[in-house]
Picture 1 (cartoon, rainbow, N blue to C red):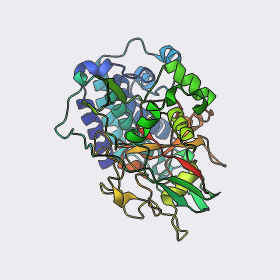
Picture 2 (picture 1 turned 90 degrees about the vertical axis):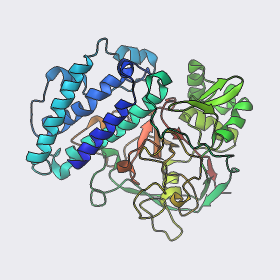
Picture 3 (picture 1 turned 45 degrees about the vertical axis):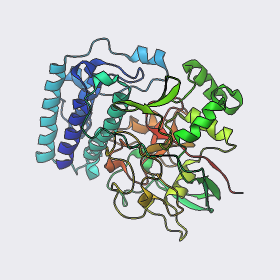
Picture 4 (picture 1 turned 60 degrees about the horizontal axis):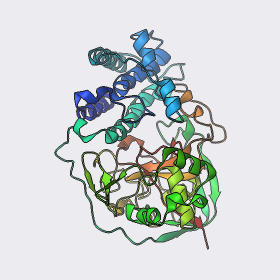
Length: 432
């Protein structure tokens, strides 16, 4: 119950960032407006735990269905087809939210939500699912809020960005050949999403990887060298998507008075050269090609993040200590990135920085299930609906990733041209 209350309090605080007029604004055409997420988070809990787990009929057939699931359209045309013409009033949504919260809290207090024959309840799967689902959507809310006009947001007192100075010179770290464990087992973690199971051990050849994420300063050289106009650097699909969007620079960059600026959460500031660059998979792959390199694979990320010279894999890049503010920029501690390398205590055994926090990390791995994958009972469509060859695995965490998601086996994924989330990258190459 404590975790549920904490989640609801953080979600409420995120909604407090929005001026009332923004409730129905749609800052990202590929996502529903904030009103949907206000209703969706508790509706998901109702549908997951009360209906699937405990056999309840739900709360409100119309709203349970309306807020059941979000959208992930490929383009604006598909988004328009999935749009809702008329949303309920805010009062109606808030009444539903209050009813749902009461019902969930009552179930957590009085029902057997951690046992029985129903697979949704076994090992409290349904409870863990609804808790982590809310944490994920808190990040969605924040990057949606990022795209709203500044006048639609209320700036907190602690919103000043940490800009820093010049980025470090690019440097690569050699990682010797070795094994990497992808995924996990129920014996090692109390809960994981279906795409985290079963565990598999893969052999990873020796490779080299950037010590730091590619920074805005690094990426600026690519932009100024005409990287967005050089078709040879882009995959055929990436080039087609770039042309369709008309994009000539990262979405978070803006041109003002002949100078580059960063569109922050609450203000625009001169482009912070030392911050990690946030880009799409298409943009990241083009940059790595420009440098004569490539993106790391998911196994290479694991090897760089969790491997060690003694052959023992770590639960976190820094070791066994629990995630905290010294280890990385995550769990909503900052509204924007920090300069790369700001959390040296979070470096891996090989000396690679910021592998967890400050931005999700693109990999070259197409999202799919591990051999032996089985959909989870509480949310069977969670992963399987995205095994379509059109999503790429991202690892690590961003500033808006909740602490509860900081685990080695956690996997995230996005379409290669989706520009809104906080995702960065680093270059890799085969060992020389």
